[in-house]
Image 1 (cartoon, rainbow, N blue to C red):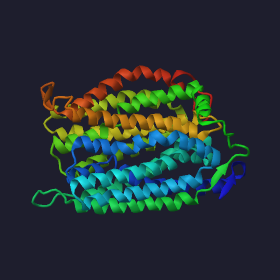
Image 2 (image 1 turned 180 degrees about the horizontal axis):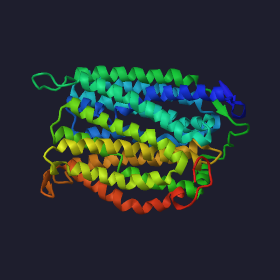
Image 3 (image 1 turned 180 degrees about the vertical axis):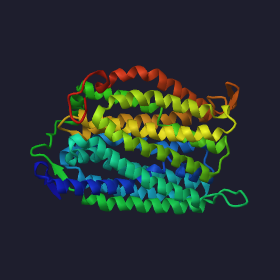
Image 4 (image 1 turned 90 degrees about the vertical axis):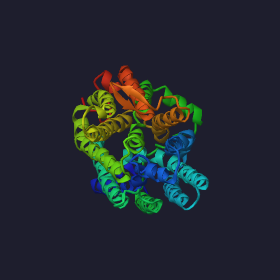
Length: 438
């Protein structure tokens, strides 16, 4: 179904908003498994090395970055919903393949897991460029922050419940043995059903268009050139790239430290990831209203330094008699800051994208961000695989691991890149566009 944007009623806006939130809430449960420890623990139980695990977890973003721009350009030309629906279907199929690897030997399991992740990544590449333009077509520009807040709170709340149930299900037995791989297989198959649920709700969202809004086919490279000529938009994208590059991999590195250094149980690690989700929900609850009222510049200024504080707190966990206290605070802080900065990023992106070639424009921004996410994981995997960092070193008298060394580097670089805040338009001057509040 296709609707004309100027003819949408408020009742239709509310209905479409509910369908969009339901679609993304179901779909994101599988995607959250890449960062909340479920897939990491599944692959660890199979016996896959930490370096390979980090690489596999980074594959969806790496593959998506390669194909996203040409796909997004064609979507602007021929319409978004048809290929977006195909992408949602392939994402669900790819995720369903991943737990099948648990029935085979280690070598065969890795091949199956990589195949599933690759199919998922192709589906994500088709779906992702459609999402922001679809949201932009029905959300009131003055309520973007609140919409993203509601959307992400719902996603995180359901994710928290799913993660808590998973932690209970895979808890260690009375004799201290870890959960068998069969339990992770069951969890992953359930999450794949959630992804198929996304297909139902996404297919019911109408494609909303403006009259004569479909751009002319001027060629991919010329269209990209026009986008690159938008100085505010591109400088903001480059800032996000540099910030994400040294913060995106922190969650998985936290989990690897907890599993391989602190020797925590699988259920404990998942519960710590739940703490991250709780922090994210708090950030979303306050973030939408703060951004709509004061603008995104405060979020960027605050979050930049807060990321450094969070990494430093995690590294200093052994400075107190009960290290888990600092670990819990670091997880909560990581979630809060990540969601707060994510809201600011989404709000500013929608405010800066040009009227035409919206799928391509948002994909340029997302490609840089996803590329940074993939590189963040791949750099860590490379450093671990070549033993770049001494696995036993000292920081203020505390014993550190190679995972901690990577976190320290990430924290230092995040601090040094504070100078890149000058690339964010709303930080530089009073805003005059979209939903950016004064």
